[in-house]
Image (cartoon, rainbow, N blue to C red; front, side, top):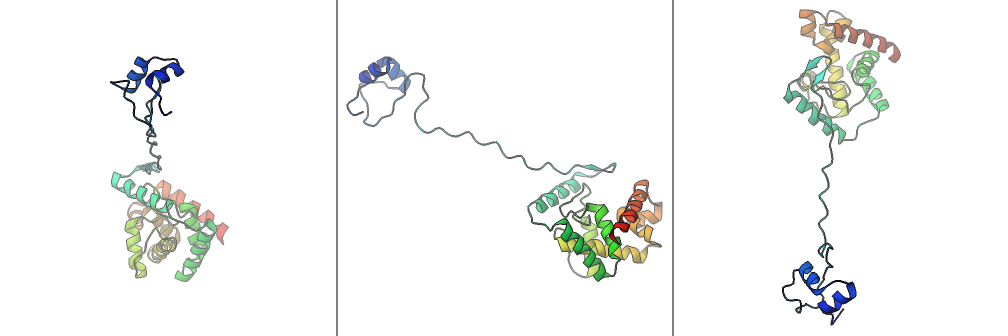
Length: 222
């Protein structure tokens, strides 16, 4: 309070002038400034304390580099992680809305909706936010190079992060495979393994399991 001296404060607080002077860095205990804040010996220095910097929020882990026994290059998984994070930041349709989009798009492109639905079900479970370590994106799990191919098939650029464009890309690819493969099971295998690889090497064991699963799921969507 006004008029206080270091001697008064020492008497009221049960300490000494020397201890108060040392605690507050006062070379001359007789020289106090009105309004000056002082601390008791052993207390923290006056004034606002800087709050500790908050720990950075932990973001989602990068997409894993291995899938189905295959390991993908760092640039592929980095692209997959970027696509995954972009989709996490977007609103996407419900799984039911995705199912309806797949069925409608297939009908418009001349593909049996039950087959397109079975492929979408197998690939992502109708989850537009699904991204694999191979950088297969969205509902139809289309990789960027296949997305560019699909863009050529439909005559316009397709954005694989756009839910409708993603479905359009996958159905257009499926339509092309059905048109060029010797039979439907080979076309389905080509969606998973690549038609050139299937025709050259035959379907891999995991490809055969994929075809069987799609065919079984198709019965659910008829």
